[in-house]
Image (cartoon, rainbow, N blue to C red; front, top):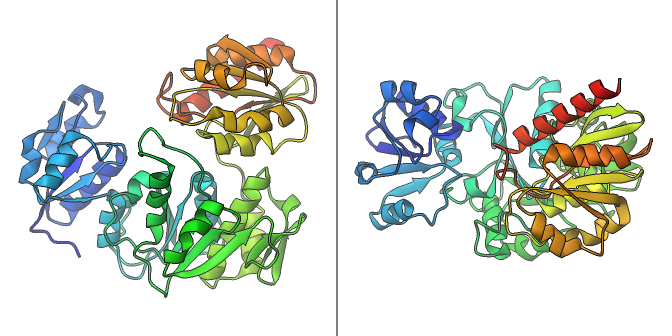
Length: 446
């Protein structure tokens, strides 16, 4: 499907845009690179200028000379340059779509999306496939970009992709052999006009599948059930409630087909991670691989950084880093993952969510909520008088205040329910800062 006679425009020079540019160059075509940041803000600007025609500090009409644009998922599709490109009839695609167009035919794609759990599920699938001795890669919205790998060459058996709604917005033919939709809960409402639009974006992962492909779906989601009639692929459901689905939980065991796995053998914590494990194993079943060995492999998988990651224990108080919890549903899962008291640290940059959705869970599971970040006023409005609150200021003050009030056996959990861009580069930066604060406290108390 690749046409070297076309000229490609790359909008946004983060990792996926840069990977696509170099792949285009490798395949013998031309690419023009454009970013709104000044050159000094782009770490690789000097190398990019050497290898490509570039512009920094804004998108200009030079892009209109291109035939196809590969648009960074971070660029809203409502910005003026996108509207201008569409008016000119320029073909707009995502890096995920471009990678799909150039990948070797012998590679099978397992694509994972959903509001929460994408990284854990995709990483677990990759872990299982690797333990089964398969040649595979993990890419997309996690780790390296899709196009950073030699995907155009034969030999990669399986490509596991974590995919965001933003990456799905500009697919034109992307059809994974196995597509997984973990859940649909409110997220990115600062980007989409409403929740329905966000859900429809997620459902795009199934749009180009055929009856030969598989769709792995969470049966307990009413939002998924409203929309799954349009899926052409063979549907495989997993459930935490129903016992007549291809994958289900009976309280102590995960069942997939005739095989079962004790939930106590999993190293990943919480009910939500049991559901993630079911989805991962169901995708392995769809690929017709050994389920007994796959379940054995799953027991060796550990939690990813920033996803209910155990950090340390100080004087009997345990610290968990759940910085990846950037929406209410993810934080709700964190709250429900602990039996002992939780001191929870919340707040960050606003994504348009209704924080009152967390009220019941906070009342049931949290001793106190420590609020920080730009959403402090919104959280105060949602929970004042309903949940014990502490407005300690910055993250360090919140952690220290929580530790001063915690008793042995308690848990302090950073699970913000918000994005991190108010005071941090990204959720990883926020999580590393949290872990650094815990290390400081431990040094002081030793």
